[in-house]
Length: 366
Image (cartoon, rainbow, N blue to C red):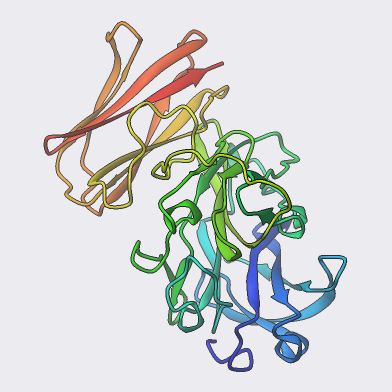
């Protein structure tokens, strides 16, 4: 798989894997790739196929059916690859693509040595046997991914969902591919969020709208940006799609604006975070989605580097415990489903405690 494209293939600027339900257990997958046509014209033209792991042990070479300009100057092209696959039965599947190598950017260390990866996690049978169409992502955010030094830029990652399911957005670290079909997030040593390069400014993602604000770039160049788009129904995760783009920063005319002090990136993606934004090295993290919640259930994800038995509790603003349960994410990650049907609209606090550590988040119930 890693040899599927010509080497050196340092022309990939991002992409995502879009799925669509056709029939029971049958899905169409469309791989969208952004190509640096200016810096890799030959490699772009030769990339007529793309390898896809369907998540059930099968790997397929997808043909390219479209290659069109994404920008008016033809500097970036968008290529699309498509195939249909039928799964043996309902289940959770991780669709993955691994291609060597990605294009270099300012916030990736030795990017040309890091395989380019995409992933979409899919549940093929939703709650109660209901069918589900995953959210539809847009290439518009990549088409407009340009910024000026000293000027804030807003990147709209917003997706649409035909079923009306809840969508939550979280920032992501680029993925590192491992054969045969494995992906893991890059470490802080390999990837720095755009505002961490110069340790200035903010980089915030609105978990509800998908708008990512970078205030503001301090240097020209290319920067890798990635977001997870997660779909929930009554608190259950149905799908999660990784979307990566490359932002081009140029010098701007006039006097640059005032750049805010450096702020650690909140990896939960929500603007309702109560505690100080956590860094990737934080031993305990709490992710809650959807938030705000209008559904009957929400999902709390616990991430830990030093894991032990602990508690997950929901409080009102007076500190009264409304719900509490034991947690024990022995594998470093676990998800817990909470029934919020009885909650009146308002603000609540969710708290995770483990091994002497504590993290709290605000929850907005609509």
